Amino acid sequence: MLEQFDSIFSENEVPRILVVGDLILDEYLSGAIGRISPEAPVPVLESAGRMRSPGGAANVAANLADLGCEVILCGVRGDDPDGEALVELLEERGISTDGVVLEKARPTTHKLRVLARGQHVFRIDSEQTVPIADETRTRLLEFVQKWIGACDGVICSDYQKGVLSRESLSAIMEASRKVDRLVLVDPKGSDYTRYRGAHLLTPNLSEVEIASGRDANSPETLAAAARDLLTQTEAPYLLATCGKDGMVLFGSAGECETIGTQAREVYDVTGAGDTVISMLALGIFAGMSSVASARLANIAAGLVVAKLGTATLTRFEIREFLNGRPGWGRRKLVNWRSAAEVCESAKKLGKTVVFTNGCFDLLHAGHVEYLQKARDEGDLLVLGLNSDASVRAVKGPGRPMVEQADRALVLAALECIDYVVIFDELTPASLIERLAPDVLVKGADYLASEVVGRDIVEGRGGRLVLVDLVEGRSTTRLVERITSEPVSMR
Image (tube, rainbow, N blue to C red):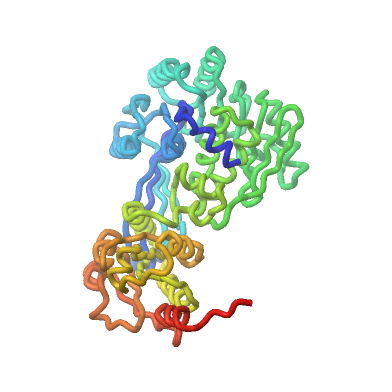
């Protein structure tokens, strides 16, 4: 699988993909609930921050762009602040918005999710689901006609917000046939005859049941429902995504391939379907088989649901997972810029960010207990790790005994640590300034006045926690034993 994945990027000829569909602005309002309103018997959310991200077809485009793929996006937005914000988010990712058609009488589809301490409370949708105006559809299809021949394939991302009407889908399918391009569809609704001409569809289990009118609560009933939909659409393939049960790829010739889930932990399933069709398309349009592409898509889905909010993946994350380093697949080892982005996003979603630092030259039981206690202080633990040069400057020329790459890899394997950042400075002050954690943790062998970064964290409303250390456990003592006691060879 790793060789197949690498082959997609081997000669820098990553597929150019046309994405057509409903554009959505996803927004998260996060905070904490601690009291009931005196005005009505409802909880009061004390807002802590907002985060916006591309949703719907825009999230499909974002997934492809972050995987290093060239993407041509085509959709509709309103003449409003939400539409402007969505365009800005896309352009920040390097995605052209030339194909984003403006319809003044139509609002930009906007989904506001309200979270309390990271848990979804409710969602507010602002949208219009009637078909887009004839003039808008004409402009959209003209853009499709212009670009479809220059792309390696097409994704139709249907959220039933009015862009992919029967007429629009028919025109897209016809245009794709003329230039011999495959179309993959993320479908919605109960009438799948609209998708005739597609190569592959990716409904989830609930969507399979709605479209087929059948229960799909067993392998046998799911297979029967999938066959009905393959007959309706005349598509060669249908990939049913089944949440914790993985995926099942059905073929019109009777093939059935079950792919077990790859999820390690689940924070948020928002946008996971967008990641599935993005990775699936990248594989198929690069010449991989549908089965191999589905396996890659399954891996990508398992990684992305371990992230917060509407998230995407990078090529590095997937490659590291395939290379047998699933911890690194979640980008545990990051630079300070990536860590700062993660911390900011986490805090906007109401998560508490914890920071600690150290050399961790010879990892021992005292370290592990200390780090577990640090993680208990919040939702996300970022560890600042002294580089080799920094350790030598602090501890002397005989240290470290273990080089920084190995120390970082061992620490990244600990479940309690979410991210590791290596720093070269003598102190972590600049790193703490950049990450702005909510909680700073240090060992109780320090006085509060001695802790570097305390003023930075407390000055922003955060707190310092001093953790008791395990008696008799220290790296210095281990080094002394190693260097002074004879080794018995047996």
